[in-house]
Image (cartoon, rainbow, N blue to C red):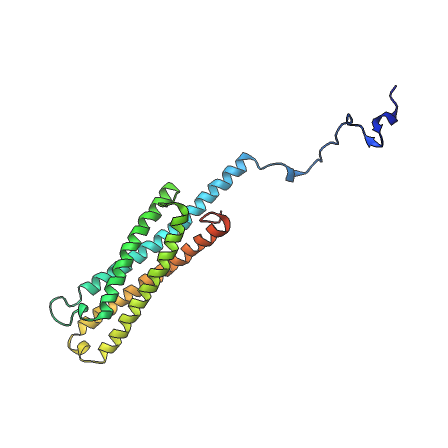
Length: 209
């Protein structure tokens, strides 16, 4: 018969002794079930699609207002003087809104691609920085152009230009107002692209999932 002392060798437990049973009722030690993982993944995909859909709405609004501003300025007094191209500020308004309209069109294509495929049009690191950087630059450019146009219109209203050809100044006002609306929605897009950059820097993903 084996004595109890035989379980101890040199004061240490015998290696043949059974290990202690695992703790019971400790749910934190169990990995998440595949159902929970699939649910979280599906929820993340839906959140990302809603986020990208909101960006697409802002891109469309920016495109519509910037293109409208471009058209109003381009068609302002084509036959009789004064012409929009006679003034540097109005040429700036036309160019800025035209550039933003083209850029917004490209970003609309990228947003639709991301919504339908779940992937960015360019590699993710380039896409997030491309969107954020261009949003910042073009928003500043659009604000500067429309501010310069506003200052010029105020100056023209103090002269005989707006008295003789009031339609020229009215159409200029409409073009500049549409440009400011485009800047507003481009600013919203810039905030969301900035959020994507922050998430990418912190989490390595363009969206906090």
